[in-house]
Length: 189
Image (cartoon, rainbow, N blue to C red):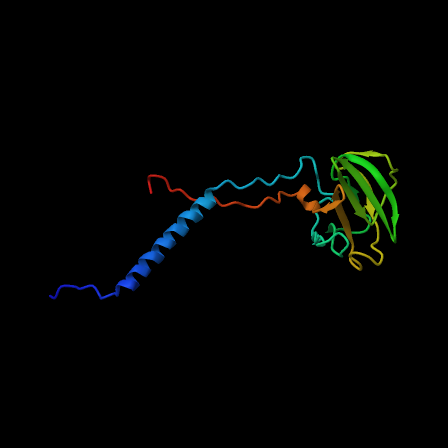
C-alpha cells in the first residue's frame, strides 16, 4: 500500500488559514470574556405596586414614547377592560386630580418620589387630597367616547417620573433582560 501524502498547499494560503484560525479562537475567547463580564443591574419593579385592574388585564396597546416630548406617541398602556370595571390604586398615594380633560374623566394619583399615575376614562367620587392605598378601588371605567380604544373599551394608564412619561408595566412586571451566563462543565467534562 502506498504511503499517504499531504496535498500541496502553497505557503501564503497555509499562513492565511492559520491566521484566520487564530483570529477565530481569539474572537471566541473575547466573546467568552464579554459574556462573563458583569452586567449592569436593571432595577426590579418597585415593591408594593399592583395592576390597576383585576384580574390581570391584557395589554391592548403598549407604551410607545415619542422621540421628542412634543411629538405624537403613546405615553402609557391601554389595558383591556369593560365599562364599569373597578379601577384600583396601583400603589399608595394621594389623589391630585379628579376631573375632565377635553372629553373624558381623568384621575391622577401622586405616589411620592416623583411618581404619578393617571387613568382615563375613569369616574371617581374621590376628592383631591384623598389618601389611597394599594389595591383600593378608586373609580370605575367609563365609556371610551371617541378617543383611545373606541369602539372597544380599555383603561389608559400613564405613569410619569417628574416630567417624563415612563412605561407603567415596569412597576408591575419584572422587565429586566434575561442574561445567559457562560456554561462551565467543570472538571468532570
